[in-house]
Image (tube, rainbow, N blue to C red; front, top):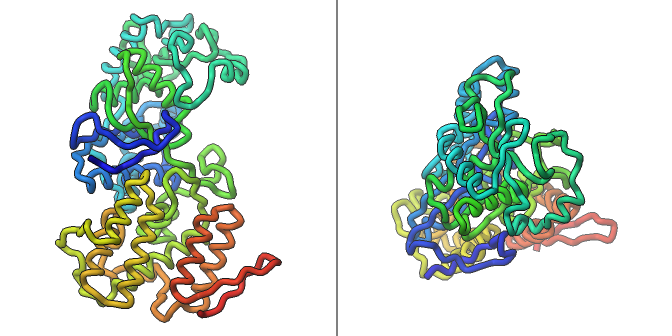
Length: 468
């Protein structure tokens, strides 16, 4: 039996993972709406579930992982019209860019990548089921809406009650809805919209609403009920709440047994988003930082925690990753290649315990540093193999050390840490403390101490350092 525990958003608790079918896991993650370049917040989401995917496979499960592409949406239509191109041309181009970005970050391709436009018949069938159960109706404007008040239990994922939602509602200009809380399942076509986004239905020409897309795709690919459903924390409400209402309303039972949501990337303590204009695209970041440094930066934070984006934090990640590669440098050049991972070894056990504790990558990464410290002393090929094998589970340290070190992407710490590098990491620690990211602050202090650098915080907020 697996020792894996997962924080289930629906239960608001960490629960032991028990798959529906022994040895197999079915997982659906809400993917990208394709009309622009992916930013680091999107990368963080895809990385979080890449880690889940990798650890489930490392734990011996056969995993079917579906991550969809939303290729029909108001923003997509608007952008395609502005560009004077078809929606297919726009979405194909940005899907290609997304695949390039994720490949650079070491994010493994999902088993299945459904596109919403390929599943319109399944969406229509699902809406018909809801209509038959008095959970869907066509409004005067032609849209088909979901009758929220007819579904018992709406709000159980997000913790929102109907009374709370009513208190916060605004006047809705859409007079086609019976209740302002109702949401659209099928949008009636507008004359101004391109023909390629108009499908025939019993309710007239139209296109699907966003929420129904995922309900139809996940049930078509993974069954009416499956193990894990995931996505960013911003999807918890209304998207995932509405998915539950649609799927449970149609099928009469749970949609997914475990709901996983990753935390936001923050810039100056605000969520990174296109609407706020404070986002950094993955490809812009990769012009300045090595892709593995970016991956390492993301993995150093727990997937459910906020991730504070800054150059100082990326610089610190660069220095820390360099220390791992430096430890491997010169110790059996092919260390770890083709060698099975020894899970009975003490460090491997600690690594597994960390990952089994809700995919705790910060603790797993700390095991890598312990192995690096041991390797610096012993120069043991066996330790090097273990370090590389464990790191590979997280998609790290898979290059030859010199390929990384000579690329000029890190700080050479072989001399115990030059002054500039130490000052840089102290600045990163100060930034972490200011952002109240105390876990990262403590981690930087511990890593410096392991290298013989003692920090002394002063009452005025400054920090002095000395060699032990």
